[in-house]
View 1 (spheres, rainbow, N blue to C red):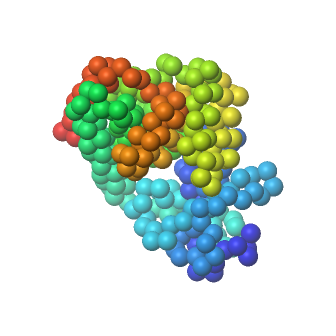
View 2: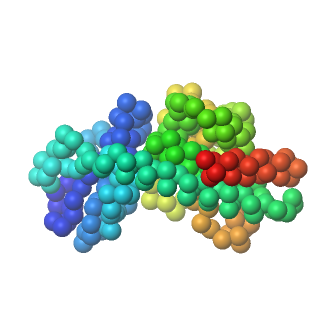
Length: 281
């Protein structure tokens, strides 16, 4: 692995393997952040080392206030790749402020997205609702000082200690908006095929597919349903309206979208109310 790394780059373990190895699944890769510029274009690539999967991720202009790097563990040297025993520390007050600010931003994103659903017959209103829901969940986790990790997010929600009614109400609204109760193998088999077509150009599609297969094999149907939706929504959220409409049928299958516009409008109003309550507190 030495020859692959530029001498000006630093490496650090991030993700669930660094933050909380106890929640990692057997399918989880080791996320290696490439900190700083690297002339060999190492980042955003996957490699295999014995029985482990390593994914290198570029952070050319990294900051220790980047939530993605929270609790990162720097590699001691490129010769041995030992992990430093302690992650780089950030003052607790700064961490709290960083997470709350990041969480509020995601809640604002959610509110902005769901506010687009002013037309009951808008073709992609169901998609807007799902994307807004995932944004709100990220916001709730961050405000709760929990770094969202896509494959673990539903489990992270389950483990939150909720002391405020409006947060609990928001979580329940999100679960209803996502339609988690529809997590059956039949629906997910259809969703997986559509997802693979939508994400076929991604360099990590095989890794993502292996994670989905792991969840299915271990009977984690709700988590699998959530994860598929998360992946597709993340891919679509920055696409323009024309792109979303062109792939409407595939998106509908992948995300198990409803066409009940009355229901969509009702849940959109509920989600907006939840966002506003969180932003006021």
